[in-house]
Length: 113
Image 1: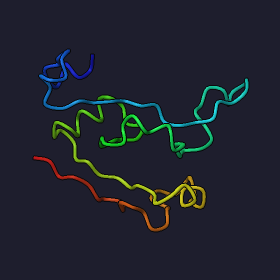
Image 2: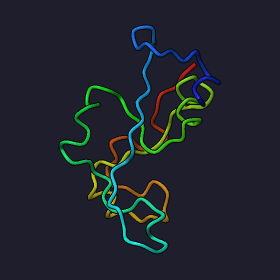
Image 3: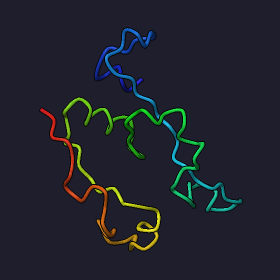
């Protein structure tokens, strides 16, 4: 378990200082062939999908190591968060930070430590 390399992992949530809940990103399964190896399609959750974790703070698509490095102050928390799926669709996928009116612009983030 990756988290054990960062902190004590407990079985009882009452003993925990923090809980980490990992959810898969929404996607649309594709047919056979090469495309079947990738999560593709929508990036927005339906109204029902996030219900179990709405009161929690989340990350999107980070590896366990990257998430824990930020939570424990080994790396800064920075990045860009688009304002909508429409902004994602209108951006150029090969141009960094190419989203109109992001919720969090490039370089925004927590400074830990």
